[in-house]
Image (cartoon, rainbow, N blue to C red; front, side):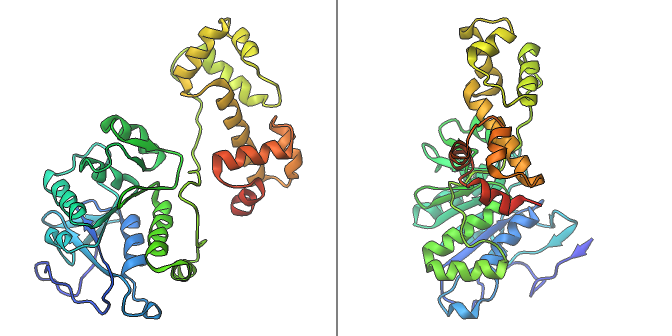
Length: 335
């Protein structure tokens, strides 16, 4: 086991010495800490950046439970201070959480609510949205999380709107982001809001990443064919995937499974959560993504191959679903 030794191995202190005077960013830490998500916060807000001047962020980690504390990857660590540091924070970033099924301690929820009520900002990366949701501060608001957790988060907190399609979402002094890497986009968005475009671009260059991806840009989500439900429909979905160039009208699809159009529409939505038209277009975009990633076919040819007919239609649906043009997608993910 790797041992990470802090500046002092004594009990955590709640007074942290800083060389800068800017907003205090505090990352709560816990046993089972999501190492990568925490590292994002520490890298962006905790790394010394003398070029930013004395008003740059201050950073501290705050243990929300007694040790020993361990992080993913076999690391054992101690923190800069205890949970009382949350009372001093200007921004609290919840870097992941122990799991979608792990309850959030009432004391942590109360501390986060109190921080927000006195004017602090709250943010989360990936599964950290479960912690912010437990405060009740996201009720009636739109929030992001990793697409794998979206259904569980929505089921647990039906009064909030979970958007599984975006990289990050912003409410009233509360921010949520999707999967791990989207946390970097959100943290850079916060830097941009606090210190301007040049500062965010400077941090992005040191991270060797694009300086700006809009929060509305889509997550890149896997689309497995449903295996549960009416097997006639499951088989139809497989057929559609193998012949995306076909027109696939509702009447044609209903006829294939020996249903009336009305019954077919109802059962299709029950199985997939989408209308037939939405599902087919999403599959065409998914196939276009694979062709853009792994082939040298011209974009115009790909539009025809996947059944969208024209480059204009392909561009429209890529922009609508991914927030990117087909050529930009190829530049990012092509071989």
